[in-house]
Image 1: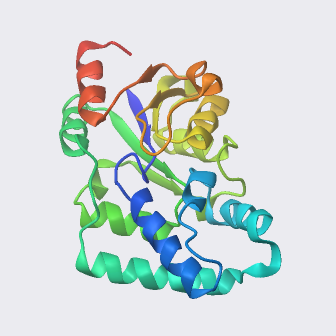
Image 2: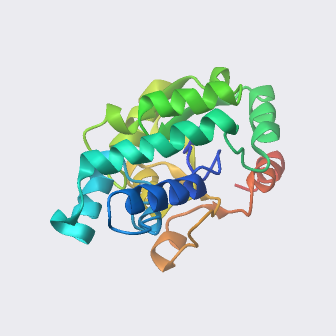
Length: 216
């Protein structure tokens, strides 16, 4: 079995941290609390998300300033707090390792951030390969990131499950030919997503049980 993991909102509760970060950054650059933009950019890489910011705010914000204050907030937060791990992550990874499942990560976050979170949570070694948002040309929902992850696993997409929480991520996995499984975080599935997923579970503990029972 092969499984590709998203990161933000799936393995780590980082999307709520980003809401606070963008609230902080938005106020610093004069556009007010902007944490709601997390909902509009779920699953996107930095380039794609800043295009959405441009549509939302036009010339009333400065991208470099936004990035500066976002990084300032996140660095302070993670200097004082561990990355918040989602319920069931460790038990699921241990189970998959025991059954010799090959695992990869397909995250829209930049590589430095993905590696930092995985290493600090002591789970970096579980994964055969990592594909990040700054390693692909096209952001989710384009299938590129999942196709690359499957290549790292040396597996056909049809042989790979994809664990995701966002619409963009689930559509990316589906368009690549993977079998998408949803574990909702900030967003609940709409009709379009419900048609493409092979399962929906409340947390990673439930995903583990499903794999144990071979219900997916």
